[in-house]
Every structure is written in structure tokens, then in C-alpha cells.
Length: 154
Image (cartoon, rainbow, N blue to C red):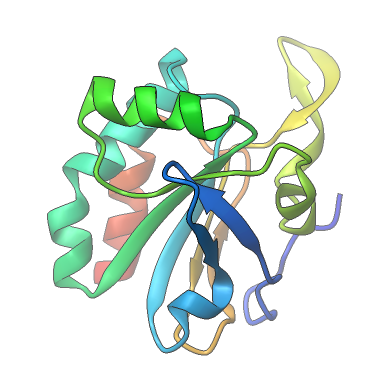
């Protein structure tokens, strides 16, 4: 798995959000944003992570930073997940896991002591010129949104 390095150009993407609208890297030109990759909607860790990002959105927005989440789930699951937990940021669908793979967020990982292939919970801050400013791999869901915010605030 190729991990993205700080300063590297962010891989391009164009994925559908929960409403079927295509969101791409180009949409964020000139802006700083957070893109995080997670395994599945409405599972314990992913719910905790999404809700914590959502709880911190006001603080992220004060810094001029948008947050988007990406999983292999489709629009229908994203709509239900957002509604159930009151999530207000975009969730993008990457069913073929191509974008996840380009970010190093899909591949071999250890789960309960076994090697498995799957989504590697990862988060990136992408700067206004489209470069990776921060990258976290194999993150722990609980408390991660606060760590990202603290990094952006420092």
C-alpha cells in the first residue's frame, strides 16, 4: 500500500454524494478541507467518528475547513446514516474503492490479529493548492476528529 506523503499532490476524485451530486477535488480549489475514509455507515466506530466530526463542524468552519467522508456505501445508506445521526456534511460513495486505493486507504490491514483486505480508516487535510498537508492512517475513531481539529488550529 502506497501511503501519501506530506506535500504530495492529492489524488483527484469525482464521487457521488448522498444526493447523487458529483463532488470532485476541483470543487475545493483554493480551500482547505478534510477528507476521511471509513469502512461502513452505521457501525459503532464509524458512527462515533462521523458524529464527532459533525459535532466539531462549527469549529472546522470557523477555520474555513470543510469535512467530507468517503465509504464504499451507496447513496441510500448515506441518506439513512445522515438522517439517523443528524449529520450535515457530505458523504461520498466509492463502491469500487478506486479513490480509497489512490489515497492508500484501502488494502491489507490487521484486524483481530489477522491480515485482511479492507478500508483503512484514514484522514487527510488537503490544502488550498491541492496538496496533502496532514495524513493519518489506521486511526482510532474515538477522539480522532478532535485531533484533526487541534492540528488545524495549531
